Amino acid sequence: MPENDFYNTIEKSASTEFKDRGSKFIAYAFPVKNSDECRQRINELKKEHAKATHHCFAYRLGIDGNNFRMSDDGEPSGTAGRPILGQIDSKVLTNVVVVVVRYFGGTLLGTPGLISAYKSSAAMVLQLSPVMRKAVEEEFVTQFDYTRLNEMMIIIRQCNCRIITQEIQLFCRMVIAVPRNRLEEFRYKLDNLRLGENFLEKVPK
Image 1 (tube, rainbow, N blue to C red):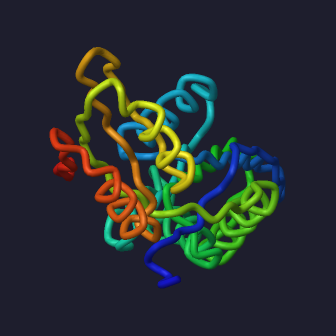
Image 2 (tube, rainbow, N blue to C red):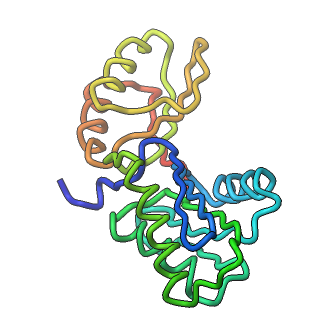
């Protein structure tokens, strides 16, 4: 299958701790779907570690690679966010945010020391986060008569689709996430049902 039909992300959140010359770096990694989730995770950690000196982070979202952000949060420019993002990219991950919380220990680490500390913290936490390969999905709306519900459910299972929302009445409506690599098969199976009232409409991004 073409590579852009799949992407790599992390399966679950993880955290770890790294120390260097008295400073404590606590790294967190979270799977996320959008920038709102990223902000939520970052804000939660800022509240949890309100007395920390810095809350540095980086994230990458989406499959085109263009949606990313990084923050040094007061550290010298380029010493925190960029090394964190570098570790996300070295594993070719997306839909991931990594936050590294620093408690200053009294000894300045210097630019090379900071880069190494944030890079190591991010690398360690991502090492603890199992990588999973997920199919890129496209969302569609479909409508059909209730008498065809069982046939629709069979097709949805066969093509590894996800039902996002559903309204089951005499006339049913579903929003379905279809794996891009199964889309042609999904359309073919729907056509074979010959549903007079059925239509498949792509959900705009």
